[in-house]
Image (cartoon, rainbow, N blue to C red):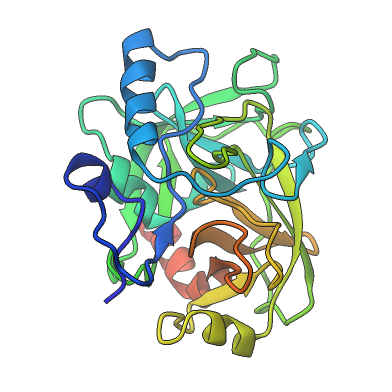
Length: 291
């Protein structure tokens, strides 16, 4: 059974045994924002430093670029005073993300907050909306070992103000097909070697949907019908730790959520995303039950 490489258990207990292959959840203690206490920053940096760093290039999402400011108005930062995961605004009061984020980082003492309308996490730009959370709903079938059903819904305490900086991304009308051009964004770790580099500016990457055959060949026995691969088989371009929960936007619709992969940008191992179209009935049911 695959063992998560970067999980809450890994950070708290022992170093990872030398498995020949591991599933890597893309959650990470990430960028420290302007609210962060100095001691929390130091403690989390130690945690990040204890985890095995992954390959990156050019100080950004691997092979990507800095997003045009506020070009991803649905982008959310899951935040405890520091960014640790991404999310996607899907309507005025709900954010969609992956379950492995809150499974690892849930803190009952310090409630999670959601920041929307941000680009530079360290600078107050006047476009941000800081939201409290009212309810978090994990998918009931979520499996933290296989990362199947890796999805959750977060209800905000009150609706956001929709404007040019904060607006929802529509859910998909259909499932994606191979070759569809997509883009993904995040504030994930950009270090290489044994270094830790936490970007403050939102990073973007353009990726295509990959054929199911390539996805299954890359990860034999690990990819379920609720997962989809996107990226490049030759490596060099990928999302990474801290990008978990970020949305895969394809032709103006939300088709995926960053979930897991082997390393980052390694040849032969593309990123694996939650296939959002498979969860439309569950999303609709959950929203109706929590009005």
